[in-house]
Amino acid sequence: QHEVAANSLRFLTDLALLALLKPDKIQDILNYVSKFSDVYDVEFWAAVFRCLPYLDNENSTQKVSAFLALGNAEFALETVERLISIGKVSAKISIAYSEALSHVGRLNEARRVALDNLKQHPIVPSYHEAIRVLVQAADYPAALAVLKDAQTKNLEIGDMYYRKVYFGSGMIADAME
Image 1: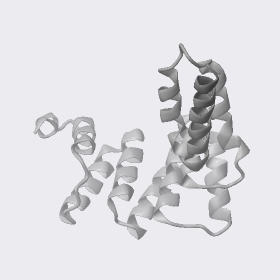
Image 2: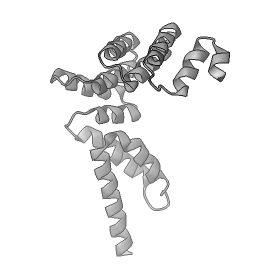
Image 3: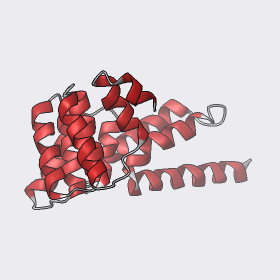
Image 4: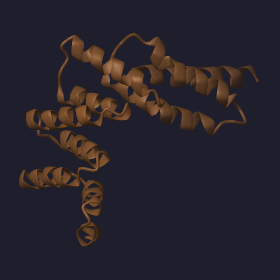
């Protein structure tokens, strides 16, 4: 029984380390731990794992993703704004900023950030974020223009994005292709 307890502690320690190293994976860790409700006090460990991003002073886009996954968009926004304030600017940070802005309901700002990022960094993740924000804002004509721009650059955007934009634009036949 001592060996089982030691292995359990090692297992939970490894998960905690993973949560610290990859805070954007906390929701996945919570889902995994919930499968062992017969062995662990899942509510206790879920609370522990949910607290880990708040204890870490390092700011990263992974931490922004963790806060968004945990439903704390305000902390996500504060985290990405700290990154920007120290001069860290990249496509990944701009995407995280747009995501955080949209989650706190500042869609116009999120749209501006996503579209500015797309101009500076015309890469697939930038297209995904611009389309996501435009769809969230129900600006389907602009989302359709972004899709067409990606097509002209031969970028693989993914069927889900086409379907969302086509359905929202009333292009049902195109969405079904």
